[in-house]
Image 1 (cartoon, rainbow, N blue to C red):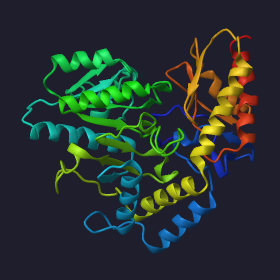
Image 2: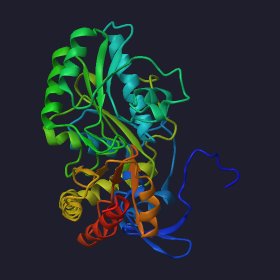
Image 3: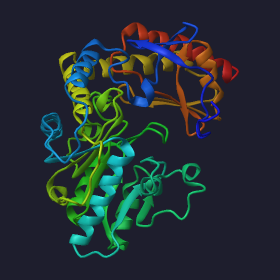
Amino acid sequence: MPHLMNNYSRQPIAFTHGEGCHLYDEQGRRYLDALGGIAVNTLGHGHPRLVKAISEQAVRLIHTSNLYQVREQEQLADRLATLARMDEVFFCNSGCEANEAAIKLARMYGHQKGIDLPAIVVMERAFHGRTLATLSATGNRKVQAGFEPLVSGFVRVPFDDLPAIEQVAANNPNVVAVLFEPIQGEGGINLAHNEYMQSLRRICDERGWLFMVDEVQCGIGRTGVWFAHQHAGIRPDVMTLAKGLGSGVPIGACLTAGPAAGVFKPGNHGSTFGGNPLACVAALTTLDVIEQDRLMERAVKVGDAIRAGLRAALDGVPGVVDIRGEGLMIGIELDRPCGELVAKALAAGLLINVTVDSVVRLLPPLVYSDADASQVVEILAPLIREFLGA
């Protein structure tokens, strides 16, 4: 790889093709995918309906730009707005672009209210992207290091800590929005309590703040509902999506409702590639398959089975701190750095990930079978026990 920029610590393996929830390397060896391209491959690999839809769309039209109307984009916007009970949708290509749009929108909202230096409340351990603004909103010094000066205008508080929010509300008149993940993915599969989200919604209403949720990793049916904040029975003012929305075809979205709707006007924000016909057809097909094949129900059933299996297999093992998650978003926290488990699992035919040094992260495709769930436990639990010396 002499001409590839050296900014990834890649595993020494390349895949040639995939089928369902499995990938195959150049030697023909098969691997069970428990990472899903980092929560991207919602429908697994080579899903026949997705392949057919994007192939047929590629013949018709791939891209025209947002200088013109895009009917597939209009259809997808209508679909997402209905599912989320939101009003408007802006399409882009990735999660960080969707979050960048949300940050810009919040700042414009603040200026329209007469606030010269609008601030956004963000969370410790959050991850919102790698552009300068989303990097600055992210709560991870490793990711930020070397890119200073960071963008100002963010107030950081502990995750799932309501008193910290109330203290900011009492002392900072420049705050215009809160941006957070209902479930922190990169931060270690940390779940916000429903009561916290409901109280945060109330504070935003009382203060005139925008309630902005980053559903880039936890959205699109992964937790058993379309969007993770729906577990709390609330509606945000801004929601960002990407990753699993196109099942591997790059697409992101920033949805708005209530006071956030109508903030952007022509010329305020844009994207050359965002919402092109190919990406929108991939997203529409993904939503169709999730709904018609009842994949959200499967996410709950299979996710519960994996967590239950791991808890039973690792019960009483010293060094296992917690096994947590919602649906097919699963974290196994250990009491020590465990990055070496990625290579050990790879050698055993299983694709996993480790985040924040000590949390094994599983983000399987939503098309996982019961047998796939059992195999994850059968492979991973002994590896963790061996690693911990149990």
